[in-house]
Image (cartoon, rainbow, N blue to C red; front, side):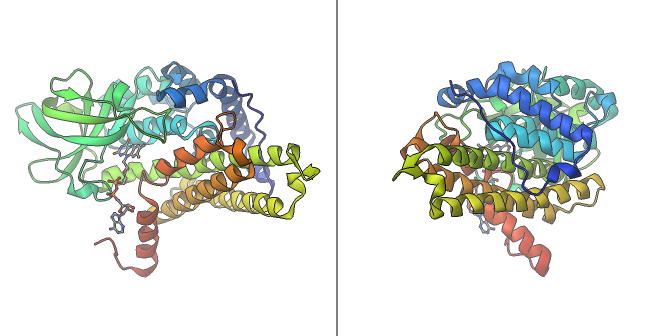
Amino acid sequence: MRTDLFQGHDYFNMDDLLTEEQKLIRDAARAWVKQEVSPIIEEAAEKQVFPQHLLPGLGEIGAFGPYIPVEYGGAGLDQISYGLIMQELERCDSGLRSTASVQSSLVMYPIWKYGSEAQKMKYLPKLATGEWIGCFGLTEPDHGSNPGGMITSYVEDGDDVILNGAKMWISNAPFAQIAVVWAKNEEGRIHGLIVERGMEGFTTPTMKGKWSLRASDTGELIFDNVRVPKSNILTEKSGLGAPLGCLDSARFGIAWGAIGAALDCYDTALRYSKERIQFGKPIAAFQLQQKKLAEMITEITKAQLLTFRLGQLRNEGRATTAQISMAKRNNVDMAITIAREARQMLGAMGIMNEYPIMRHMMNLESVITYEGTHDIHLLITGMDITGENAFK
Ligand SMILES: Cc1cc2nc3c(=O)[nH]c(=O)nc-3n(C[C@H](O)[C@H](O)[C@H](O)COP(=O)(O)OP(=O)(O)OC[C@H]3O[C@@H](n4cnc5c(N)ncnc54)[C@H](O)[C@@H]3O)c2cc1C
């Protein structure tokens, strides 16, 4: 079992910009992660299973729906607090953060924003504590970057609708109690539906064989004539903008989370470089190794500044989709580059599970792909600055 020696790094005194409450929330999340998750995360990743006993603890530190209002069981926090919690979770493992991101931004958020009062009261309090877990079904086998082409659809039948189709690559699917599923109605318009485990014809087979996000369960959602009550449709928003609104919130969390993974890799490499002696001195004393470390902390600091500002804009309701895209793309790319450099700094030891770097590196290969790929986010920025759509 690895001892978690992580220490935060704050080169530009970013803590001065945080409120006391935000610092308390971050420190509580960090302490919980160190005590409850760090000792078991390598084994969970090796076994390729999400440690479900962590769910109530995640609820207690406010990781499920941090910004959802208190009356619905959320913590009623601001966006920067949400970001800091995601940072601390991903500092340990991107899979842990994924579970919390999906629950908060892709399940609780759409119910809160697009659901009826009855739906909010029924689902949100149980999701906030982790008693229920949800998943988000947008991607299909033949529709990833182009979700608008989805073929999952439903037809009306009295007080119900009949849902058919399949979703793939769905985080939390194998053990989720509910799924927020995006499907087309008879007019071809996209709507969100809450599908509950146990509904006849609904199955969630596990996807195995991942070398990435191994401590997060991923599965399919299969709908074979599933009868869903009309009262489970999210009626307040429809069209592709509805799921994309959820993705804005999740991508914001990823931008913060990636900083956590980068910090862990940097912290590990910095400590190792001071202890590892070659040619009679610590490798930290060699210029080439210092270049790597100096560039890492520079990139982390730039990402911290970008993300903090994005948090302010989001708190004011002014952050645009394109700004969120830029932060997600930049920060994940920054983290994956740092993970690769840090892995090299540890030499052969860098490939061992005694250190977290290789796990972060593999995890980040998913993070750079999901919630919009690296290239798709570039196209979003390109479209924003030129007014030209290069997707099609
Ligand atoms: C571990 C994991 C968990 C996930 N969890 C979820 C989840 O919970 N819910 C969910 O709905 N989805 C989930 N996803 C799916 C994820 O969002 C998709 O994988 C992602 O959107 C990319 O789709 P794709 O894999 O089909 O790639 P594709 O869309 O097939 O893209 C393949 C390549 O082509 C490029 N490309 C595509 N279109 C263009 C274009 N117009 N111009 C230039 N290049 C292009 C892409 O950038 C990429 O490099 C998850 C994925 C992973 C790996």
